[in-house]
Length: 182
Image (cartoon, rainbow, N blue to C red; front, side, top):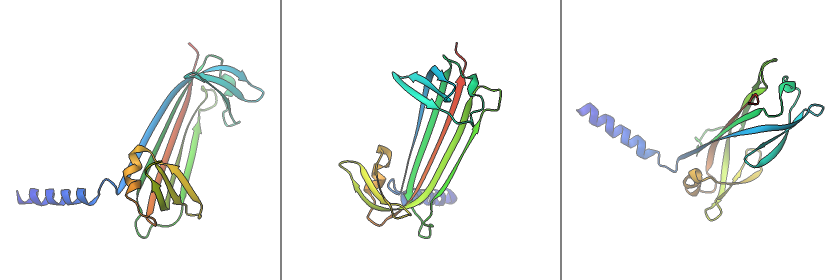
């Protein structure tokens, strides 16, 4: 019983030490299915439609299976972005780390690609306007950046003071797969 009380006391202390304004995150995934409407092989581009919109897409030579795309094919696109912010530790380096990569479908398969990008940095908080939900920060290179703050991150932004150092992690990933026309 005594061990349980000690454990619960430590757990509650840990939970209360990390208030809802010490850390915040937002993740959003968007999925769309587009239909190939026309192809311009010479310029390596094609037109797609979906959700009442039309897009013209151009692909690089890295897409080795471009010649397999046909009018009527379905282009399934998934995009996920996650943003996490928290108070930077005192000795956090003033540097930005960015990683990115992508893998395309092997030759002979239907065209497709999977990719990801990760950005990690520490910024200096300048201000937050709750009326417009715009936060202003100073980047590691000294540039000033203003951004609209999503609903999930507003309590965190409102609790900041000028000069606070904020750790920002942004991860995004995408997948594009093409299915043959019905």
